Length: 231
Image (tube, rainbow, N blue to C red; front, side, top):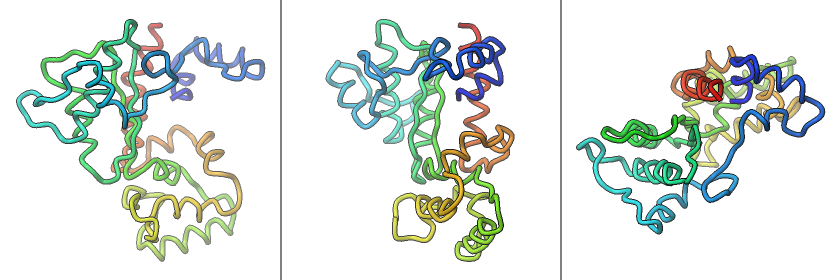
């Protein structure tokens, strides 16, 4: 998200270049992250209980349509931020989809009819989990890594970098487990985090739509960049 802000907004890029090397977080004057009540972030698993403690009504249909189980959780998250004395300009919900109905639940809560959230809502929803996004941008950098990827393609019956959404996230014993596949890909060479940090944005955008990384990049450009640009 920071890279997209730097790419899309001239003054953010200027700030980053001026502060890089002299500050731990060169973009601290451009954006900040927080949860509710001054916390650094909000644990999504605790959102429903916290919302009920505050008397917020998180149940009920969504525009007359019954909500998915996850929709109430996401509604709780958004209501908690909306109730802040100073609501944020944007709320980013990050959660692994795990091949569940969470994507549909997110859409129900984020675009709820009859309710206007006082911020933009962006979903960082990886299918099936965040490791799939790291795999989606992994590119072999030497012969041993190319051989490793070829072996995985043979074992899995598909290219995990081209179709990471076909990996699993709930069975660690499965050869399709995303964490296990990522570990095998990065057994030697640069770490997954290092590759992710400098992967071309174009590669993120060209990733499989089903893993939802490309859509996330589009949403950040469409919804978050304009908010930050306006200040």
